[in-house]
Amino acid sequence: MSNTERIILTPPGDHKKVLLHSCCAPCSGEIMEAMLASNIDYTIFFYNPNIHPRKEYLLRKEENIAFAKKFNITFIDCDYDTDNWFERAKGLEWEPERGIRCTMCFD
Image 1 (cartoon, one colour):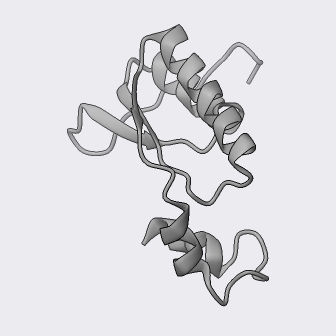
Image 2 (cartoon, helix red, strand yellow; image 1 turned 180 degrees about the vertical axis):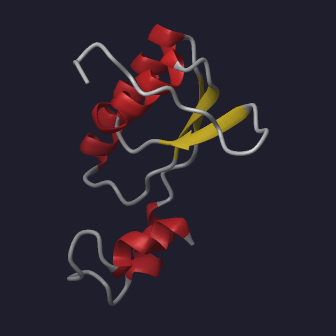
């Protein structure tokens, strides 16, 4: 497949809309562009209290907002609830990336 070809994506079942959780536009950018190319109606959901320091969090948030504006995508911004995150992460501070601490985000 060449760089200009894309796989056509389809939402599961008969769903017409997708809520996409994004941690940063560079990481999520490829799937966002693929969804646009596949004419999928989606909303970017930005909730990332696990991203530190705050400067990095704000940088990622601004990149997501810029992408959303550029392509006229709805953007949902949730609170930067670090107190809740640190409470839930207690005892897991030294767990490796992609480990048990990461799965907390999906609970």
